[in-house]
Image 1 (cartoon, rainbow, N blue to C red):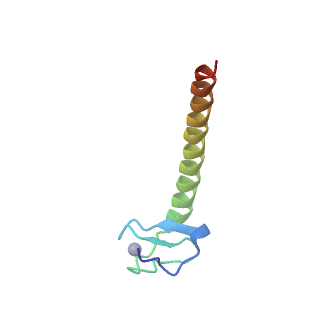
Image 2: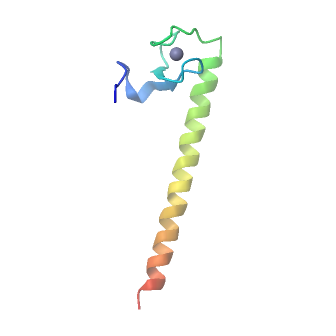
Length: 74
Ligand SMILES: [Zn+2]
């Protein structure tokens, strides 16, 4: 897998080419797509929300596993 030369903590999915780009850069490092004013911020916010949702789902699975194991135990 080819990793783009970007900081992974600031990665952002480019809406034009679908590759990861740097959210601090004004344009995509791959296709030079220029983000519209406020578009980047919107995408960053969206990504943070998705991350939060993923954490919640993970936590729910974790709880379900604990529940399942506690029922398995005698
Ligand atoms: Zn791009």
